[in-house]
Image (cartoon, rainbow, N blue to C red):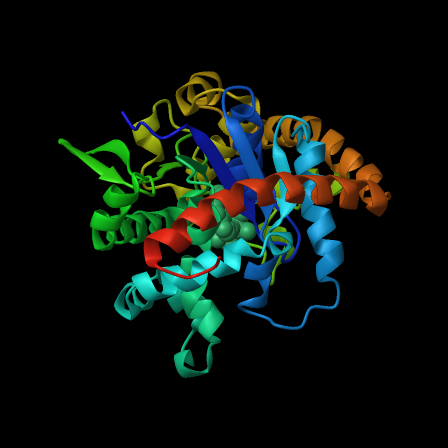
Length: 355
Ligand code: TYM
């Protein structure tokens, strides 16, 4: 058991429209965690500069993600909700982590390879260093748990690698200053300044796939809008996209093993289970043996029932940017107090003269 204070941190990039994958992989879990943990939820606007530097509407997109947080049910009094760029210590700690992490670690990141494509030499340095900023987001608050979709797993492993290398490289200074915290790593008890953060990925839909191709992740950047359900889609659009979702000609299987080589069927069953808050077994026990022509309308009704209120609330909140900015400002002040405390100790550990 870690002796660090349990704290949840997560973030969403303000780039493109939020979709069902973001909702089931992230937002729905954020809401579930707010009752049992202290939580910090960030709109990671500086990450949005890594792939595209100039955005027409970055401020508006940042407010849009904040509106989605609130509309999904996050309580701004209970949780800290803010946008990353208000707390400059994220960038400062990222710089130190750039000097901890190795270039080889960054080159291995699949998200970097996907986003940089063939012309890697021409990708921004920020895109390569992105996981270092992500590690800083998390470790600035010494967060112990991070709810994310499965696509972020590799970045979280790297966050642990960075924490571990920092703890090792500075172990004597950390101990000398009395800043170490006891934690268990494998079988061993070790002492370190940063926790080895746990990802929270489980659930019936950790990786929501495209509705047009069960082998591809549902994503903001897919050129086909039919591949995803956007959080702001209206009821008719949601129903139409589910009706058009790719499937195979067989009925749904009567047990989970029967989904193994059927990615489209598996995806729709996972989506149903996550939206209904039940296991995939439960969905199969209800719909096993039935045709997609039965299952799809039930899924469409469920998706509309769960998503339409969020989308309506999101539109109402977005209409009042002053309200959103007030919440982000206040959250930024609360986050800053924590960030300053961590960085004061980091300066001392690393040996940066600041007073
Ligand atoms: P981003 O903005 O791409 O996605 C936000 C969250 O949505 C999840 N997600 C999915 N989950 C399931 N199925 C999908 N198809 C799907 N697509 C997206 C992502 O896993 C994520 O949880 N690097 C992060 C943002 C970030 C962050 C952080 C997250 C920056 N700093 C610190 C946690 C902690 C990203 O680009 O997520």
